[in-house]
Every structure is written in structure tokens, then in C-alpha cells.
Image (cartoon, rainbow, N blue to C red):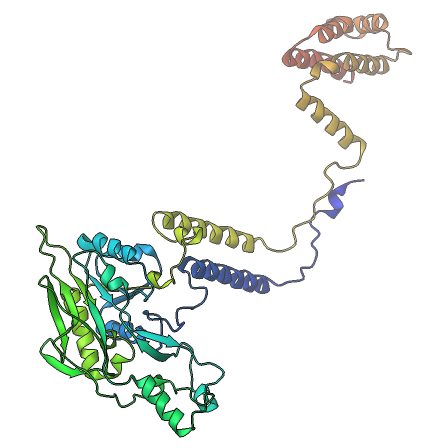
Length: 454
């Protein structure tokens, strides 16, 4: 018996080659997409949360400013990592009202010789749309929209270390738009508290009540509300924009040190640059001029920081894998995976069935046994058995009844008088120690058998 009969048999595959190729390609693309989105931190957008930062679409947010600056030709970066705070280009930070003054002070001093910085000071207190919001209004509300409440300047503005300290205030001239709308609804509904929920200001641009005015960069305009945040400028502060009372709405620090530091611009009135303020074309033009002036007019990138607003991302191993110097190793690994996948695809299919590792039959058994002895290097164990086997063959060839060595020598002297006796050759085989000596002695016995068969 032999296993050769099963060699070459193929079994049918449940999948075609193209089906397997499709599964491999789709799986590979999904895997690469997962690695990419995890590496850039794009696992879901949670920035539109009603805060006063570059990712928010509410009245107090600055998403419109980022789009405006981007449309002007600047490279806009919405940074979620602390490394973005060290950009050499213009950095725009929007710290919340409850921020630590020491942290901001350290950041400004760190950037004094890194790049220009713009700080937009918050003003509005906001809240969302609760269950008491009228149904017609709630149906129009989009994600991230907020209602404006009170207004004031944050405490950290006066707690910054010199020369960044600014004494600012919010003028409570007249009613805020929110208070005016609340009063109008309350009066119309007879004081019903459930109905006294103001409609969102974002729905329309309401008529401002005694709006403030601004002047700067050889332009003038009005602010959206009468609640205006301004400050009294000091000698080392360059005023960029003022209001009707000549208070500074935006100013730049003139530090006057030996080595000229990068400029630091404070926008004390956020309605000049937030989504609420950019509803007016004049204020939008002013916002672009403030950006250009803060960055010294350089055609550089503008980084809007999100980390100070609690939207920072964490650096993981996947992020590092797609950044220098690890990017080269990652690309090599991806290339190697592609090569391995292609090779696997080219050989895909049922393999040819092979026979058993050890074939059946006496000859195969002998061959395998001999191979085992050769691998174990135990040729010395074959000397005595081979000499006895040779004696039996010679006795059969000489017509002897028994394989007696003396009888074999006597018969050989008659048949082959010139040949060396069997006993001497067998003794040489049994005395051999090295594989080469064993083979030579065994060959001598084999030659004697061949001469008798002629």
C-alpha cells in the first residue's frame, strides 16, 4: 500500500477568489480607517456644547470666526492638544470665566518668545433650552444653541500678573436683550412664569437696546447689545478698539523689554468676534483686522485652542504611530502587511492533499529505519547484523547448508582462490569504528557477493 494515490486530490472551496479578495480589501480598509480616526482623535465631535470656544455654534461661540479666518486664506487649526499652545503662528485662546489666572499667566509668559497670542475674554452667562421653552421655539433649536443671560468680566482678568493685569468692567447700560424679552413676555402673559421663557436670541437679530458703539482701525460701528465690556488702558497698553466712552474694547500689550517679545492682544469685548457679533459685516471686517494685527500680518497659521475649555485630547500609541519618527516604521509595517496579504491571496484555495508522512510497505519501512539510524549516527550498530546477513547470502550462493564462516572460507578457496577470505573481511567490518571504515568493510563483503553471482 502507498499514500501516493491521494496525492493531487483537491477539495472544493466554499468561497471564490473574488469573494475572498473583497472580504480582505473591505477588512483592510476598515482597519486602516479605525487606526486613522483613533490616531487623530476623531471618534466623535463633542465640541459643539454651547461653550465659548472655537468649536461651538452658539451665540457665545467662535465657530464663525474660524470659518471667516479660513476663508480669508489662513491655515486654521482647531487644536485639542497642549502641543498646539507652542505654535509659532498666532494662537487664539478663549479661557472660560472660571479659569485659573496663574495658568493663563504662565501660558502668556511662555509664549512671549514663541509666537503672538490673542486672548478673547468671556462675557456672557448662558443656559440651554429647558422643558418650559415654547414648542414652536424648541422645534427650531439646533445643537449647541444657547440663550444669553447676564454679562460680566471674569475675575481672572484682574488677577493676572503684571504687565498682563487689566481692570475691566461690563457697563449695565439699559436692559440686556434677554431681560427686555423676558419683561415683554411676562407683561403679555400676565406674569405666567411657565410662559416667561425668552426665545433664543440666535433665532433672529433683535433690535439692540441702546447699542454701544466702537471705533478702531479707521472704522466705526455698533455692538449688538448695550452690555459692553471695556477697560481703562494703561501706559504700556496700545488701544486697538474703543467704545463711545473711550474705554478699550481691544488692546495690545507693549511690554518694552530689551528683546522685543511677541505681541499679546486682549479682546475684552467678545461681541466683536463671537458668533453673535459676526452677524454684522462691519464687525466681521473688524475681527479680521484684529486677527491680522495680532499676528503682525504674517501669512501664517492661526491656531484656535480648545484645551483651555476642557476639550483636550490624549495622545495614545496610535497617535504616535502616525507621527515622525514612528511614521516610517508604521508605513513599512503596512507595506509588509500588503505584501503578505497579496501572497496569501495568490495561493488561496484548497491545498493539494499529500500522502501520509510514513508510507506503507516493507521497502519504505526499511528506508525509514535506515534514515533514522543515519540521523542518529549509529552506524556501528549495523556491523554485526550486516556481517551475519552477508554470511547467509554467501552460504546460499555457495550451496552450503549452514552459514558457517570456516565452511564459507573453504568453499571460497575452491571457487575464488584469489579472493580474500570471508572471515577476514567480516572481522574488519566488526572492528571498524568510524562511519567511513564501516562503509568500506561492508562494501568489501558486498563485492564478494557480487563476484559469486557472476
